[in-house]
Image (cartoon, rainbow, N blue to C red):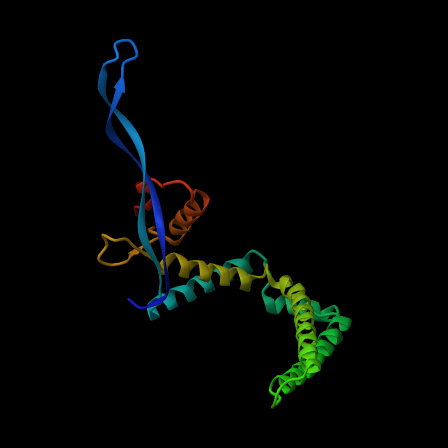
Length: 224
């Protein structure tokens, strides 16, 4: 099985076992052996694997995307193209001032990066002034990048609830549910982590795992 990514974790499991303890009777002073239940925490190394999808799985994920997109449009949720056209009719998606500010920031960022590259690749020993200037340029680059990201993120958030985004999230969820595998020490082959006969049943299992991650789940939850 081809892997995209994998990592290992220690899975702690709480179990109870019957132990024999010796107690002393306060009245007689005699020792007595009694049986009692004791909680034991065991640690098991578990490997989580994200499998590389095959062509059939990619096609199935694309199908999930198309179905979700179609359902969103039927419910009246706008696509990115529809939303962009709507803003175009009212003067454009990006305000004129923000557009000018972004263009100016990108231009300034290019100039500063060019100066930084020129100074950092300067032959010979750098002077104290050169080092101070490089530090200033780095601060300016960081500030400009933050300004650009903040401005673009503010407009990108407008598309968070479009049909395209919902369909994309559905496809990503499909990949997570179908490509995540787990391998324990006793397993010969990796096993599907989120088991379920349908997409929605597998998604429910994922929500259960996230919701009660700190508690051991009943084994019946993991059955098809």
